[in-house]
Length: 86
Figure (cartoon, rainbow, N blue to C red):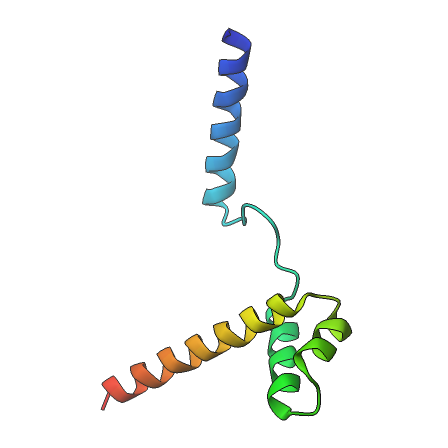
């Protein structure tokens, strides 16, 4: 019982240190921002289908759809912010 408490305490402390250093927890993203932007531009250009782009980047179609949605949300937030400044 005491040993498991020590392990739990060390784990919690290690997680606090990692969080303070800004390290991600959990699974790492499959694509970096540059790759994601390129992926979205290929889909929006109409030259490649979602399935083709997914295969090119070695990811699933759902990853492609999430990347497109993230870019749409960011663009929408940017437009809303720009219009509120006027």
